[in-house]
Length: 188
Image (cartoon, rainbow, N blue to C red; front, side):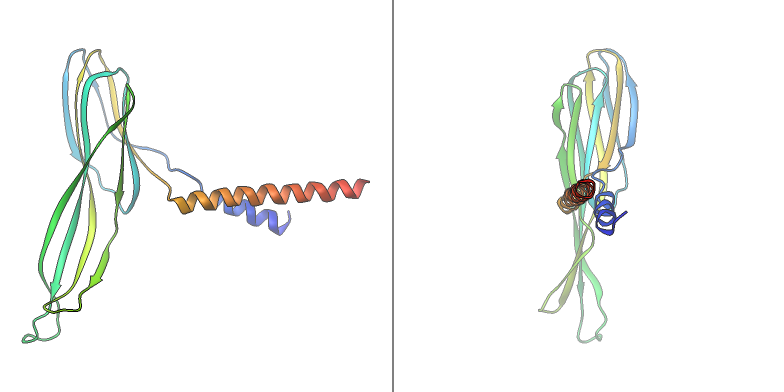
């Protein structure tokens, strides 16, 4: 195999577009039953799509996922020396509702941010750190008919991953085309 074909194939394989979904919660329900379910699921930094699927269309649903943005401030006291100490902070929840994709499928997209440290130029605050913790979930619905529901989550690839994958596929196709063209000339 030629080097350009091998490199192009490697680009395509390195940027596989999506991760498999992980089931967070599943359950069954009876006809006319009201269901309320909540809990939490730990996720690291990244983009995620939550999927709520029913085997039968609910009369209504009210589902949401929630992340919390944590902010910690660090200060110095010149009288006590150069050591930093935690001097405040805040935790702010962000709630995302599920959008209807079909009568039995609902989705919510959420981005979880990693640690970010921002310096300040004016003491006593010298910097703050911000990061997200994720995720709480709440599912409420009323069933018309008996069935099952599943709440799952999957990673959503970043746009750069898509670009890398498309570029790799293009390079692979180009390398194969050049290879075929050379083989044709050899037999003529």
